[in-house]
Length: 113
Length: 114
Image (cartoon, rainbow over all chains, first blue to last red; front, side, top):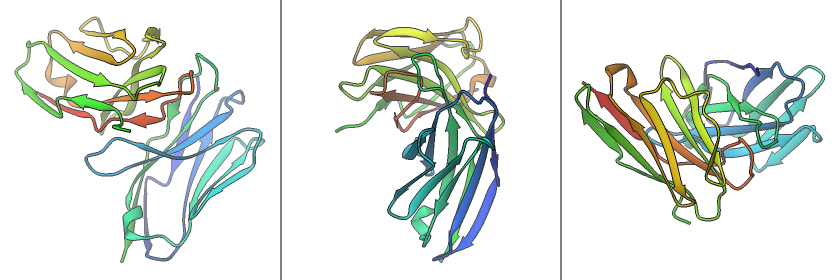
């Protein structure tokens, strides 16, 4: 089955700096890669996703890049703000009826004011 | 949009008791998921439904766990009998994508089995 590894497990940045979180996956058939943000006491929230026919996707201060050859994808957050502090999860799946998502172990991002 | 609604938010009970967790997915979503989150094991998919039909229950720990989706707007996860190792946060999620990828999560039920 699919295996997703996520790095780093913790990340601390100064407000205004950029943050990058990286994930690798094992199943070359995976073609859907979402990212979730989980705040304390809340459920994960889908913040951005990318499909394998696209190399990069941006949404305001967040972007995701995908390298299918190397089987890795990354989340980039620019101009970080304290409210970006949360746990971020990546996931990978085949977007078929039976393609369940496999999650990474999460990255705890702390943005220091 | 009310989001995915879970109840109760917190549950504390003694081992051996039956526990029932409830979920109302977002209206119009055709997929529903039950996840369990612990520090040790992270986010684990227990079971998911498409159009009220269970598609993959390979993550259900054992026969003590059961899940039902009697209609498109309601699902339950039941643990009987409960054990201390079942203590975790249980999340329900729903999706309109029709596959195994959750889009919207509820805020979870924090379950403590004493």
